[in-house]
Length: 447
Image (cartoon, rainbow, N blue to C red):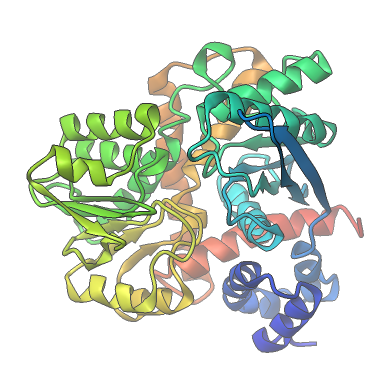
């Protein structure tokens, strides 16, 4: 029976009501892989797609903790173990008030294909909580993390499910989570990635997602005989991914001109140089301040209260904040202002209407599951180092990351060409990621 996108999406929505972000992620993939299903009817017969969109396991739990005033607080905790077809579950933990099951299913589904593209043996998963670390003391964050791991530890392990960080989960949170896991299990093992380098972490892991998005953009630019040199770079976000995307863009001769947070954006016409970027890292990572303070510190910058940075004229855009942060109107503004390359450091930051505009205007568009795969790739390398009780030097990890991003780019291009969509990174990434997982599902029977 032929699979039509509209019919399949009705099926998805009936099985997963109200989970709009999950529906959006599935529809993007289904639209891309129809040619694959038509060419390989065995996948249809075995209902591989239907199996792939259903998580293998979903864990939901309460997380009680005491705040500094001694009051009991309660949050929801989740872990979506989506697919272990090609390896143990791998994907981040997100602590943010917006977290719900639909958000985590979208992220976990994206993670399946992203991890597949890295060629490393990692399945897909995602987890987190509606807890907001913003404004909390270190002790409050520690108590929350310890309570969260007191339940989660039953479901994770170095060869079963290996969480990492995501929004709201940085080095501080990973440390508290790992400490509680070790306390509960009496095992020092690579159950989490993103650890501090002096107790099992990998060099380049904090930088990996941002670096990887820039490496992917570099490869896209090469297809048009372009480089980063002298290009104006609009970046959203000001956390880990945005910071290191800016750093690598500077390494390659680019000129970052924007950063943002949930309050608004800064535009620095003179460019965000290394000294300014170091100031931002201290602001966000140590003082945990707001990006508005950048405009107070540097006279070359203006603060755009409540605005995202997509109205600023640029050559390259790196969305590094959160899902659906670029709408169709903003995408059209980017194109009208001369932006011709977009590489996503965040997960699904562009709405469907925005993606249509990129593709209709021949923009080099690296979607998140390909362009931001560098983070999970180095998480995979961290797992390997933990398993071998080894630590690779920075240059070796960076070289491996660069090679992985080059390989992902080439795989996307070649797959898109093979399925009649030359130059379409969306089709290439979705099809290439799908094929590897689909073949593994077929090999293992109905499980």
